[in-house]
Image 1 (tube, protein in one colour):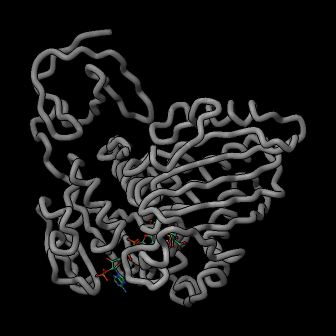
Image 2: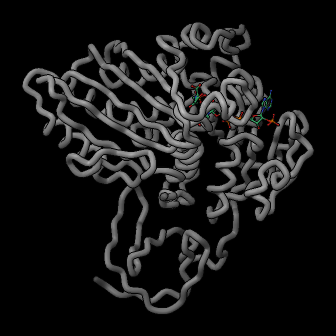
Image 3: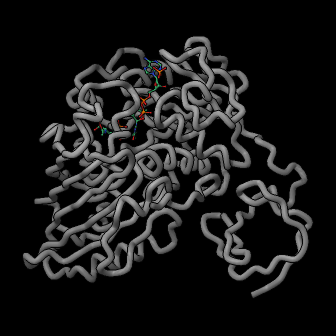
Length: 407
Ligand SMILES: NC(=O)C1=CN([C@@H]2O[C@H](COP(=O)(O)OP(=O)(O)OC[C@H]3O[C@@H](n4cnc5c(N)ncnc54)[C@H](OP(=O)(O)O)[C@@H]3O)[C@@H](O)[C@H]2O)C=CC1
Ligand SMILES: CC(=O)N[C@@H](CCC(=O)OP(=O)(O)O)C(=O)O
């Protein structure tokens, strides 16, 4: 333990502290330094030396602010010392204030939402694009090149445009003869942060992964890269909270249709299949196909993927566990639980964590992986913020240290 005296420390939550601080542990990873002060963690960033405490120096545009992922970005940025929202858009709700659309955010000082076509991007440095897939390509094409963009929709996730058109049932703008779309598609970096951190650093446009693909690729990619599992017979059973479907009114999402029951949907044809297969095939450097079935659960937030795999010849569950431990021991947001502990969506609710574990199947040679996230945080807005922090050179966890909300 060592002791240091600071004139001012800017906590992530914005509190100021003066005087002597006992530092019990200092860890330096990915250019970030973390001080643990009396059990609380405090980020070391330039605000520690700077007198410009808490100045929101990066101007954020939030497209699709009136949706669930947009509201989640606002919630996370409320505790971000550097990112301030200066522009917000909506479609049907254009002209309204955030507090009237989302009364839980009434305390936030935010601009009125405007339609995208009326948005002025000249005083914006970076954009979170929280729009439905299919609307995003045209809008991103029209954005000034100086902007850093994290797109939460699926519009730039698939490298293969024909595959996008097949699974999304609509033309991809990159198949137009206009050269600009293929260029934008090519520069998009698929932002599964823990796997693509180095590429995200230099990206102008990040295609933020879907929630199911996040919960599935985080455990599988390291195991596939290490050649510990067979590429055939990967079976994925996933469950999502209803907020995964967005805020738009849909008959299928009425309380009376969702409560007290579950249902499978997109059986054999959910649009996340090609995204999952793209990521796993990249890891394997050969084509992988999976069986994937999502289910809608009578809960608001949360996602669990239960994954059944066959281990490579001679590999044990202990090998899988040790590989996941090695891959994620230095990661802030991905946690391999102690052996035998079953991950629960309750334990990641409202946080940017992915909790995972691996279990022996009773059938020899097989294993079962369970991974949980909050679909709106690590599955969407949290990972998007993690990516933008990296793109702009801020500590990756800035604004993301919310602990899970339990019970
Ligand atoms: N919900 C989730 O858990 C996840 C969502 N995603 C993706 O993130 C994106 C946003 O999702 P989510 O927030 O849930 O969706 P919502 O349906 O809750 O919100 C959509 C937002 O887009 C606006 N919008 C709708 N149509 C248009 C249009 N034609 N032009 C401009 N703006 C429009 C809406 O405005 P208004 O309300 O005024 O009509 C609203 O602000 C989607 O692409 C989704 O697939 C990704 C991962 C997880
Ligand atoms: C419950 C529910 O409906 N979930 C959405 C997935 C949301 C998400 O992660 O995906 P995208 O960003 O790819 O839309 C669905 O199945 O389409």
